Length: 152
Image 1 (cartoon, rainbow, N blue to C red):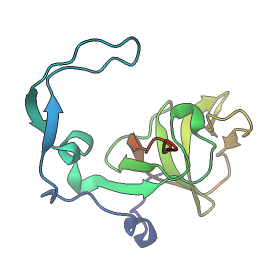
Image 2: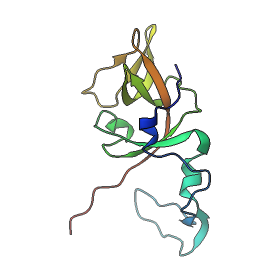
Image 3: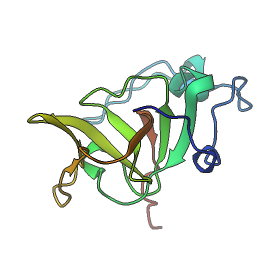
């Protein structure tokens, strides 16, 4: 079921072994998403975001998501997906896969005796894979998306 990544997908970006950006500051505390709490006034360590999201540079690439079929998994139109080709495409994982030549991002699942692709938006029906040409391009490990801009 695996196949080398087609050149068209590589254009979205490959993970570099030597990241050009370097490190960014990381606060020494966590930020609560509920009630506010006092934050530390100092930086604890520095974090290299590239090293944080790319574990295997030689097998990792980036691709932009299109559409809203995976909103329930926090994947929105235009998000940057970090995809690792070395990970096993097991049921339950979100994968980038070409089905009959069309690339898509969906959750791999067993349904009855077969394998299907599941969207996390209920408006989309499962996609059965039996009898179709399928090539897994990798497992999605991280999603990067910007929050909507706040109007002034």
